[in-house]
Length: 68
Image (cartoon, rainbow, N blue to C red; front, side, top):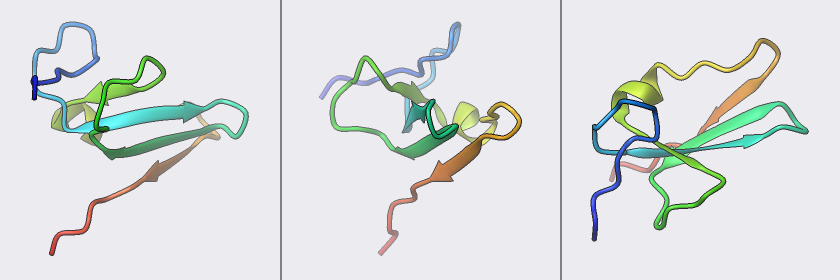
């Protein structure tokens, strides 16, 4: 499988999560890296995932993977 990089401009780190937006509900969802690249989603490295901020009034939903 080909390595996917962070979608942030100028970042060359490996992506670890996928970010999607729901503009109608003013919500951003961050979860594990999607299986395939999606043109409507943004892949983020660990640093950008942890630093994620959204506009005031928006909600961030973080989907974590189970660590068994």
